[in-house]
Length: 117
Image (cartoon, rainbow, N blue to C red; front, side):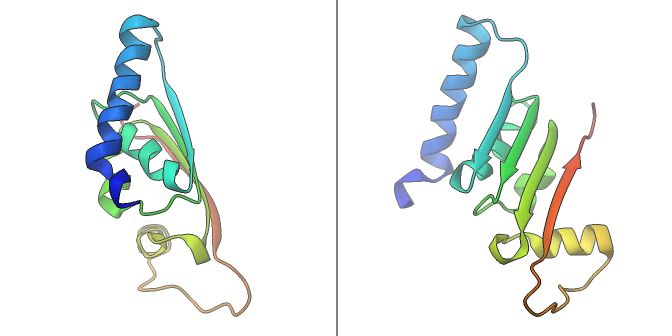
């Protein structure tokens, strides 16, 4: 995974977006990703990165700053045991300082948002 960080993946995605817009004349781009790809779906939804809609399922390594940078319509499906940013959502949407302990129950959510659209 060390060779697949943003410094190497972002340029590949940018090239694909450029091709779709300039060569294929695609007007709107929707990006989806699972796990590793979920982070990059969201990164592509930041202002000026090309995506109009993003969806991620169980995204890994997706940081709070990457979530806040999204300018596209966006949606995340995830379960708490797998989500590194669950504290962010708990604090923002429920005002929690941390997650409650529900025993064997998992913290699961499906969240959609749209800003500036």
